[in-house]
Amino acid sequence: MGVADDPAVTLYGVTKTFGGRHAVRGVDLQVHRGSVYGLVGPNGAGKTTLLRMMCGLVEPTSGRVEVGGRPVSARRTPAGLGALIETPGFVPHLTGRENLRHLARVRGVDAGSVERSLGQVVLLDRADDRYRTYSLGMKQRLGVAAALLSEPAVLVLDEPSNGLVPTGVEEMTALIGQLGRANVTVVVSSHALADVEECCTHVGIVLGGRLVADGSLADILGPARVRLRASPHGRVARVLGRTHPAVVLKQGRDERGLFVDAADESSAPWLVQSLGEAGVDVWEVGPARRNLRTVYDELRRTLCPTR
Image (cartoon, rainbow, N blue to C red):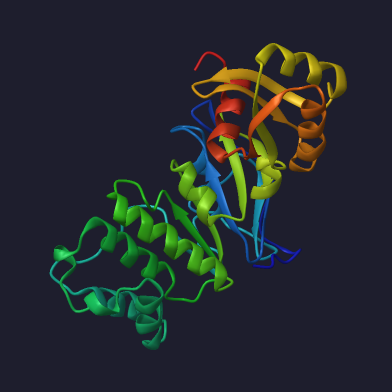
């Protein structure tokens, strides 16, 4: 999926305080059109406050927010933006379709948008069931459908998988990925790092109200490394320390023996060659990719050592 250069959402030095407590501290952020941007961080880190400022629900203490190049006004949802920030307030005894039709009338949206939105969230087959019979996952998907009624260019979702059973999480993750592929810009907060890694093109990590990492998923994770296992252990360490000291990132032992992490996959052939020439038996070699959990934990240990 291509990501255009012009930003759909921009935050300029945004800070928000509540009663003297900093919820968000000097955040600069760009979400580019066509991207799926995942905000991750612990509870209380400032993720929801950031999303609420994007939606015009909370006014920054300082800095400014733009959506589609236009400043966001306090207490007013920006044009071209749809959001699911809180639990949707649907009427229990109405069907999913009836609830959306009511919302469409209230918002002055064409009635045809109801069927389109139901199709986008894969709820057409249950659209005539009463809302009170829906599972939590179906209720969340109907909430996303409500946010999509006006065909927004930007969709903001706050913890849409929170409380869902595993199948519901899978469905929501797949839905977010599908929306991104349909060129809807999505900004989503989540605790589920594996799901963010699966469906997001870009990631921002928020700790203590600060955006401590921000970029494409590929840049956040870094290049693929190579991991090899070999013996005898002492000789492996001596050979690599002598011939490739700048390449080796980590040496250690795990449940499967001695391992070496090297800087990138391209170094594998000459690492294996050097060890072989020194009489070392290399019995496993392959890629060792970092995941988002690893990056996140490293940042938390570095920036929040007491937590």
